[in-house]
Image (cartoon, rainbow over all chains, first blue to last red):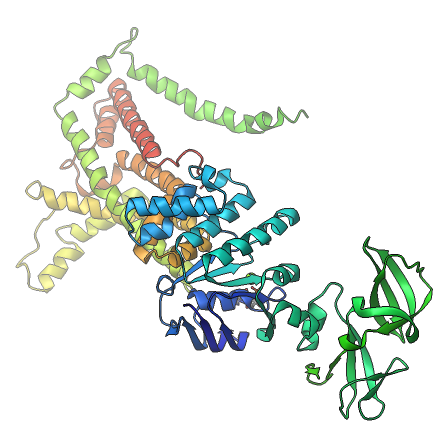
Length: 346
Length: 281
Ligand SMILES: Nc1ncnc2c1ncn2[C@@H]1O[C@H](COP(=O)(O)OP(=O)(O)O)[C@@H](O)[C@H]1O
Ligand SMILES: [Mg+2]
């Protein structure tokens, strides 16, 4: 059982506040992804959980036990570093067995565990090599194997795939997810790649400027972003925003169209995903500016009352720049945000 | 310019320089060592190795190196580790620790002589504390241990910094991530030093040790200042052959023997501290 609880954790580097009041609970055996742009504090949070960094304030518990004052090795964690940190002076075998040797396990147990994890990561034929003789992808596998060999309660990964090329990344994504699901460990996985986050996570914590903006399942984060930042960060292309003026109880005027929305007295922002727009007889009037055929779809960047607006339409449509389109939003996919708090309004 | 030739052209000046000022004199010295005027002979080597003082000077030189170098290595490692852990004032500490490097070995010997001398600081201090009634002469043939100790101290004080600067640079090159990985996987600070720092420092250790060991076999001025004739070493004998006995053939032979010892130890150090084949450090 390794549920992780992070309570009111904040971190300051000098006068710079890297993390503000983080609260997060990660369930036993959950695959949690910390997603956010570079510099938002993902690594710092991961290192605090690992014990490589101390929080300025706050508590971290793993498996119901406070670990704030424990050394990394006493926290039941293992870690995969961004640049792998595979020791260059040790063979792959000794790298994978490093933690086991430090635990002073008997030789035959070290051998057994190393061979088993090496097989799991498909590197059993590399055990005698040194890291200088491995490709980036193989080194990455060694780093994961070294962590798995510890049979930890929690495995922490800091952008483990970010140094691989796109194809390898896609392959490793699926493989890592499978291996970790098998191993029954709780996983915290840091990435700035939303595709990685969406495809691997049980739950995503979206981070922004040292705060967790939303922690929810990938589909929830995608469909119901809790804040404007999430809506603009997740999805490629991201959500469209248009100003909405009140037009009576639960009625809103968006770019000249009256739509049903939440009841609120003050102006809101209307938001909709590009793929949730359909050509219709009645709807928003848009002028196409750029048309990008993407094979399966047509990505159209257009202008709606002076605002940029993107729509993903069926590739059968023939649209040229300059064309006038009438696009209707799918009613159940319309979202609303408070421009002052930037939070979602239901 | 032909790209394959360019590197050779670029090293040509330094090669010429080395040939002119190192290789040529070396050949001259060798010629002197292996001849007594007519033809090839080993007489010079027989003469110097047959002399009654030779085993003593050889033993003294090796003993001193064996006593000083390990201590210097340990000290330099300790100091380098400390310097690398420092956040503030690191440069200042490093400058202070390397000051002895800027002092010539003879001057260093004289500084320590001023401490151990009959009218030196040590005597004044012991006298002041009432440990001795009157100043005693410490550096005499009755106290060979104290002479040896004084030379050791002077050498350690003078020449540890040369290893220190090499090791500080080497430790600074080891990525922090290796230490963090080792920590996460359960290595204590001491284990991290043994399993990460030492192996990854091998190239720097090689350089530092080779340099230091060669210098240890060439020790001369510090010994001359502190020990005089009480503690004869190889280099001192070479000097005596050349300038006191005016026997340059014997001096050349002894110089070549010192060179051979240095080469042998260099090879041993390179071998012991070699990086395993395939490992990239
Ligand atoms: N040791 C440190 N000293 C000072 N500032 C730091 C340190 N580590 C991280 N930071 C700062 O904290 C912020 C968050 O860093 P980090 O957690 O590495 O971000 P991420 O992993 O999301 O890219 C960055 O602005 C970074 O400059
Ligand atoms: Mg990071």
